[in-house]
Image (cartoon, rainbow, N blue to C red; front, top):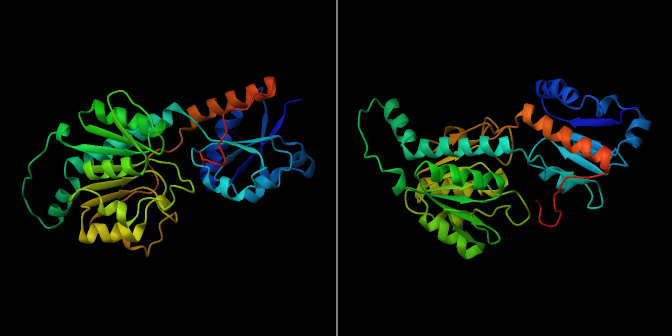
Length: 315
């Protein structure tokens, strides 16, 4: 008899239905997938592994004998915050395709800022025909804050497209062809030198509110910011002040403290802000389902659990 794996999700119905179509096919012959709401009490007690996508942590906690949880997302902050420390191990989705997708997004929106798209869009609305001088990419420095899997891929892609790239991480790291900095002093160095700052660090206790007024005021005059990390890392009020009074010229925001961004939020209409609906690196279901299936197959055949999140470090 194949083991039963609960699927726990609060995602919109269309998203859940899409996963309902790909996960059973990927896990055929390995395990049976069943939505949390359809589980019997006995099935909840018997489950040792669950697959989750934007889950309610209370539902995960209602599976008392879980050994580990496979997330379909890279972000697991809510699970980390609300599940007990002695709860199941949490495994983030690590998909090379996600790194490729994120690096593409970082390049696309860096080019958007590099080629002065916000300025030309503002000119169009005012019917102004005026050309601005184009700087070569080699004269534009992009600082990547967070050089894990996603940040490293983004840094390499930017470098391959001619940009001067700096990297920053909490602890010391190296990347071929990329000048890397670390720690508080390294952060200030990257902020002071970067024309475009890209946030790609995970949300942890240490990074929550990390980019505040002091950090934004350390940026170059006319610098731009891209937040593809998590909303709570960036102090929104400090950002607005830096956009309105300097030094920042524009911000591309894909993540927010509250999502969806409420219609009343002033960021929607701010002339120096580009709002995106959390689309920088969506999970690719076809590749993610194969990775998840491989992880689960190894677990049931040998007891091997994939690398899990370090609760103390937060990632």
